[in-house]
Length: 331
Image (cartoon, rainbow, N blue to C red; front, side, top):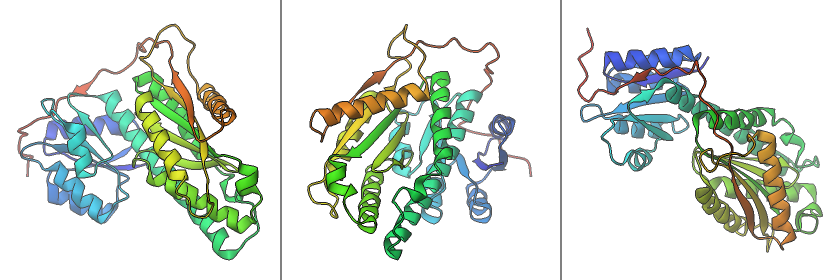
């Protein structure tokens, strides 16, 4: 059970958010004051901090303090409906995501669950990187793929996010990246050198992504990158950036890469077959092969649309309205 800290001065709003999250299986702790929230973060290290932002409640300041002391803790900021630039403000504060009220239960639960799962995925990536570095320093002759075999958690994450994006109608992007002329450039290198080069590639790829994006080695010399809440145009910008970052790898001179892109945009068109995790991976793989066949050092891909699914009859419609001037909580 994941501990989520809700920093919210309004008793009514905090109670609604607690019901939303506890109903989804999360453990919830509410802090009605900023200093109390910060003390609870230091004491309990919650898996996620959810904080309101109003004129009287500086959730952005809390976010900055949390990021300074515990930078790995994800923060979700909640803004009032009249806020004109929530994305810019939340990004400036260092938050991973933001929501604007009024807030539906399904939206809150979906966003919180996604952020928690991505945080776990990033921890798994960190373990992979550490093992690759150990291989490099110890001169171990095991193949670079040895520590990468346990990717089931990440695969489950991707599978689930396809279903969630179909349900809640937000875009997601998958990228498959592979170095060009792998057999010539990398496969022939001694295992420790190859491991070092792959580790450097992973580092440079990850440095070119947002905090909510995830990149992991998927197979020998191949990387998969997951971009939540990213439409085709945005994913294409990221893909072009990653190609340039591969060229910056110092351990292999003249290295380039090919990249296959598949983007699910639920609102793009009607009348097409439902998209699945497998179909997206197939689309990204075929796009990667087209990029390689065209000479490499390029991106191939296109949006993948699906027929909008009818809303479930049992979908909860409970919402919570953020309060700009909340009541004072009882002593």
